Amino acid sequence: MTFTPEAFRSIMEKYWRMAVHDGMISAASTPEDFYGFKPDDVECMHYRLAGYGYGTWFRLRDGRVFDRSARPSTPTRSIYDVTIH
Image (cartoon, rainbow, N blue to C red):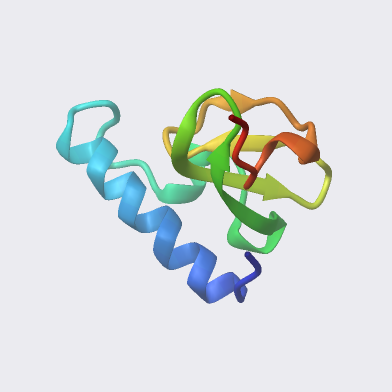
């Protein structure tokens, strides 16, 4: 799904705040520091990963993919947003 950079920023901030609340990171960091990319770098978001289920993944314009906790994920486009039975 494609959004504007402002929408990506809002979503990134939501998950960053959750990470701060859960003690994963310090409140002094920013969403950009946490993720290692800017909202302008995001091409689209995915909401399902085959073999994993539902979640949130940010696909960057350079092809890299990160989950909502800023962990790298496989960049294979065909395994996102599909259901495999």
